[in-house]
Each structure stands twice: as C-alpha cells, then as structure tokens.
Length: 387
Image 1 (cartoon, rainbow, N blue to C red):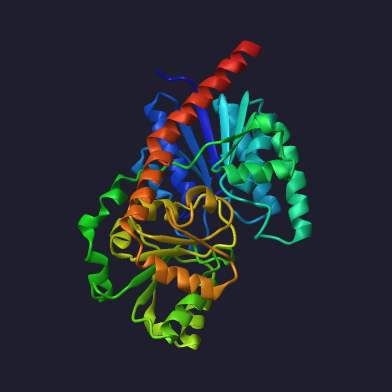
Image 2: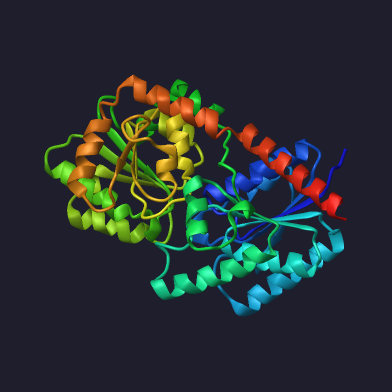
C-alpha cells in the first residue's frame, strides 16, 4: 500500500557517499510502500557517474542538467522552476533534500509549492575546509534561513549535529542524527576475492599495499598521503601505494609523484566499482581528509577487515575509536602518519574484529531504511494531528 509521496532531491549523482545513500534509501523506501521519486542534477565529467544506480534500483528518476554543483544564476533559476513545477504537479507529501545546493533550491521550491513536510540531510561538515571565513559566514546565514523552512534536519553523525548546533543553524529538537547505512555484505565476505586485484597490478602477495579511496579534490588532502608515501619509500619501505578515485587534481597529483621520485611506487587506478576486490588485497586504508562527514570508504574497509588510518576530522572519530577500531592521526604530522601506517600493518585481529562488528551494527543499510521510514511515519502522523 502506498503510504505517501516522497521526492528526494540531490545536486548530482557523482561517485561518493551521498549518491549511494540516496539511491539505496530510495529503493528501500519503495520496498516499504513509499511512493518515491529521485531528482538529480548532472555531475562534472571528472567526478565519476553513478546515475546508473537509478536503473539498478529501478527508481523513478528525473535528471535535470541545470541542477549541478556549480553556481550558475540562470541554470539555478531554471532548475528551481523545474523543481517547483514538479512539486506542484505531483504534490509530494515529503520533500527530502541532500547536499547544499539541492538543499537550498529544493527547500525553497517545496515551501512555495506548499509541501507539508520538508526534510534536509547534511552529509558532511559544510562550514570549514571548503571556503574562507567570509564565505563560511554567508553559508551559515543562508543555512539558518533554510533550516527555518525545514520540518526536520538530519545529519549522518553526532559531530555534524554538534557543528550545526554550534553555529545555531536550528534548535536542538529539530536536528536528528541518522547514521549512514550501507549494504556491507559484499565487503564482509570479500576475502574470497583475495589476490585478484594484486594480480591485475602485478604486485606479489608479500608486498605491502597501502590504499587511499576517494575523490581527487582538495578537501581529501592526497598530498598528505603522498608525503607519507615518499617518506616511507625513501626510508627503504618495500611496498606500493594505490590511489583509487579521480577528480580535478588527478594530473597534478600524478605530476607530484613523478617529480618526487615515487611515480613507480604509486598507482592511480581512476574510478573503480569493484571495491570489494580492492579491499580484499589492501593491507591498510589511509584517509587523509581535511574534513569529512561519514566516509563510505572507511566504513567499507572496516567491514572488509582492512586496518584504517585516518585523520581525526569531522565525523571520523564517530566511527573510529583510536587503537580500538582503527587509528586516528593529526592533519599535519607526517612522521606520526608514517609511524601509524607501520603500526597498522601489524594490526591485531582484536581490532579488526571490533571494527567490523561496529560498522555491521551501526551502519547497516536496513537499519537506516527502517529509521527513515519510522521518521517519515512520525512526521506524517504529527502533520495529520495538527491538521
């Protein structure tokens, strides 16, 4: 039975956590009887494309070329008008927006279209690491206005919620934590594919393989990862480093490796979908971001029993308890990062067991879908009681 019309809006379906989140969530909600539609903008060519998830999950899907990440007054106005017309035509009961730009255009359109319930999810920390102090103050001001239009604000971690509260984006009772949930079965059983990725790269099983998974953009701070790689290699480390992902900094980072004399030991694979094969052969996953919400790569690696070394930023400490489920490091101490990577290469089973157990319990896809469905039902009930 159809319970309610839900319209999800996201700026783009580029490779990353938000796109995977909204596709799997929309699919799960449909299976629970919610009539769900997804609207997305178009991603940049360098970002990787996950719009095929709409077909994979058999979603009702609209692609708006005018709705993307970049600010463009005319395109943004056109995207806004299309969203408003769609809402007026389909009369959704709930509009649920994701990411900053879609959150702005979608929530304003929903308010003007008189949508009863407006929900927005913050997938990460948006007030630091991306812009200077002046722009960040403007963003805070805009988000306060948008929050006033929202029925509920969701965050993927407690630390993101705390950041919103620190900036007075909305009152505490309006902001709820809904942890990211992923389909982790493929990762917890990925050891059956051990050796496949190494054979593809021509790397022997006894050669340490250190990986980094993520978009090649400034916020991911791959330079820090490469500084550690250079230090280790120059000290005689007989291992290899692999960077999985692509983005605007791909050529620059490859040039940096060449100029640093480590080009032969660092492999750039570009975007990959077979992450289970990759995690099966990694000895350590290193995340060096300046800021993060809830990184999918860390959750996937923990599910695959790969030791994780990560900068202690954003929502990462919500996932990793240092030396209990992984290893946390600072953002600016290469020697400490190197020492921690060496330590992670000898991670005891008790840490790997704890890490896997934690993510399977707290970041399960079905649990996220159930929590969202329960929240929607609660909001619908409250709206009916008010009316």
